[in-house]
Length: 86
Image 1 (tube, helix red, strand yellow):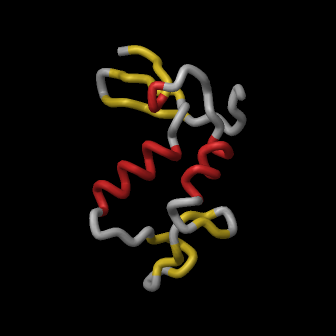
Image 2 (cartoon, rainbow, N blue to C red):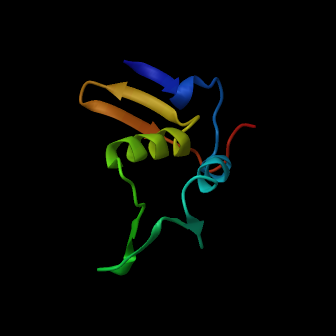
Image 3 (cartoon, rainbow, N blue to C red):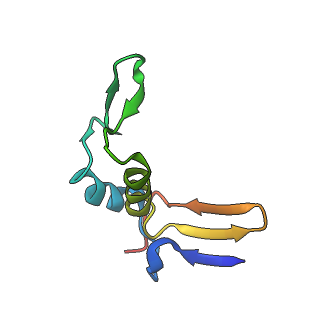
């Protein structure tokens, strides 16, 4: 157990920095990733994928890069600050 940074970086990264990276691969518009769900409209967003597990992992790994990872007995928590240290 302990604290590290997601993605083996040695500094904080902000969610704003990570959005730039992720937005080039996943549809990003008006502050939201994905497209509006046909069944629920603006309530939920969809990112279409032929391999949802791989897509979810890739999205999380990129959006959480540089976040603070704390491993606990009950699981892992990752916090990505609004403003990074760079």
